[in-house]
Amino acid sequence: MYNHTYKELITKLQVSQEDVDFFANMPFARPYIDNTSLYQPVPFVSRHDKGDLSDKFFNKAINSHDTIPRALAFMQRPGSLHSPPTDENGIDLSQGAENPFFITFCQIESGVNGYIDTAHGGVLAALFDETLGLCAESYRVFVSEEGGHLLTASLQVSYRSPVRTPSAVIIKTWMRRKEGRKWFLEAQLLDQDGLLKAEAKSLYIGLKSAL
Ligand SMILES: CCCCCCCCCC(=O)SCCNC(=O)CCNC(=O)[C@H](O)C(C)(C)COP(=O)(O)OP(=O)(O)OC[C@H]1O[C@@H](n2cnc3c(N)ncnc32)[C@H](O)[C@@H]1OP(=O)(O)O
Image 1 (tube, rainbow, N blue to C red):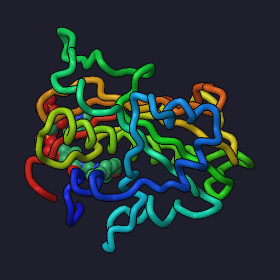
Image 2 (cartoon, protein in one colour):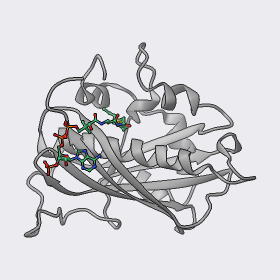
Image 3 (cartoon, rainbow, N blue to C red):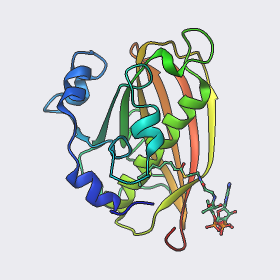
């Protein structure tokens, strides 16, 4: 999977100041970038070239001026999240659409179009999968402190309204519940005006042994 652990990568890689400055000009992103925010910018690990053949889809194929030139990730500041409150079904009550655990902002250009001026649904599914995967990995590392990599077992996307290009979007992701090796997560993709564009539900499964 990687020659480094996710914890090493998210701790050591740098957040691009250019990406922060780019999204800081957008009103819908500013509350997350503000110093008083409950969120902190974290490296979008899969956008970084690690000198090997991992993450090529995100750090090369869709990392160009006419595809997805900018992507910026945020995570809830760790601290109050250990042993988060759960209900009788194991649902994490500390997270949801109003208080997602992991967020990404993406600038989407016409190089990922399907129809004219419209982002391809497969690319939106990939953005969901990656952000949900990073959410699950970050939760695993910083909250539940468990070992073992997670793989996508299923991803269900509901497309509510076309995503126009070029445009900037926010993808909010959160942990729903955990059952043994099975991690259930949810997500929303919204435009700059806060309109819901797509929703997703995913299942990640912790590997029994290393890849
Ligand atoms: C590190 C930073 C990067 C983070 C971002 C990453 C995001 C992108 C991640 C990916 O895109 S990964 C690539 C796409 N995914 C794959 O290639 C996974 C291919 N599938 C597999 O390798 C295996 O099917 C898998 C590891 C997911 C599960 O195999 P296991 O042998 O470990 O599972 P097992 O068959 O023992 O099932 C365990 C439980 O999960 C359930 N399950 C397994 N697959 C399922 C499925 N597809 N849908 C629903 N349930 C499923 C299964 O029923 C069972 O439930 P119960 O415990 O309740 O009985």
